[in-house]
Amino acid sequence: SLDSTAVTGTTSDLSTLTDLTELHFYGTALSGSVSELGKLSKLQRLNVGSTQVTGDVSSLGQLTQLIYLSLESTAVTGTTSDLSTLTDLKELHISSTALSGSVSELGKLSKLQRLNVGSTAVTGTISSLSTLTDLTQLYIYSTALSGNVSELGKLSKLTVLNVGSTQVTGDVSSLGQL
Image 1 (spheres, rainbow, N blue to C red):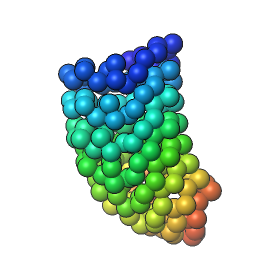
Image 2: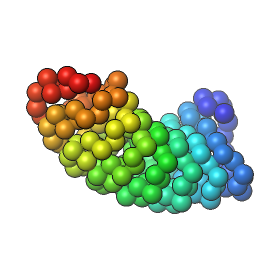
Image 3: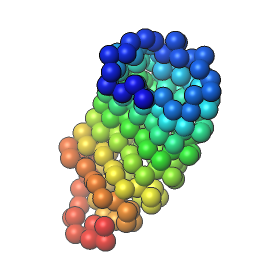
């Protein structure tokens, strides 16, 4: 892990390290296109949050062994459908990015335990997340997501829920089972 260090470099410098299973550069000066990291087919954990990484995330859809992905606070672009093939993901952190698309695409990631789409252009209704029964943490703050909070009542493992500044409505008493 090189998290929060003074390490610099580009994603193309890393693209030949094809045996890597984990790559953690959170909070570093790493720059370049995220598409270069799509070549690292053995990656299980990828964290380039709070870096200068940019570009379209579509190539990350090839990283089907990923269980952890953090792109938060980067200038990456793309849609949620680009990530919907990552069916082994347990954690997905895309807050404060330019990612957009329907939250229903993320509802296909049935193994998710932590999901953070706060401050993104992700749209849709929260009912599509009700199938993610392993979720323990859900952050959808500052999005255009809508629906009735009761639709999250099936998520019995939730310990953290942040729906601030959304179009979610309803009575929180329906969450009594959480």
